[in-house]
Length: 89
Image 1 (cartoon, rainbow, N blue to C red):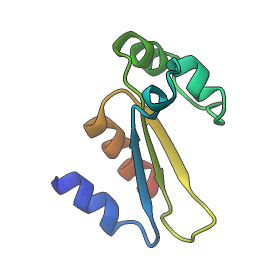
Image 2 (image 1 turned 90 degrees about the vertical axis):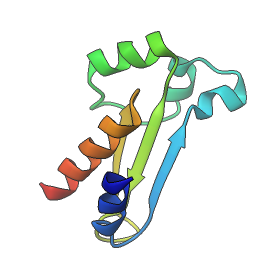
Image 3 (image 1 turned 45 degrees about the vertical axis):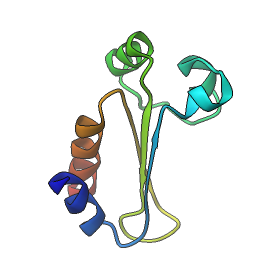
């Protein structure tokens, strides 16, 4: 919870977290991610997401409601940590 609070505190605008949204539509992770821009997604993370059938998407608006950072992962804690790292860059 501390890391989530840190992430929220570093964001001047919203933080959106989606967990396994693909299951709401009876989609595979591959089908679901086809509708998003995932060009920077690490292939090892993608393989693990598919293996675990776990899709976490964090969208953070650190400065304005227009610019955002999106993180995809299979593990919520690691996704939050990556989002914090991206904001610090």
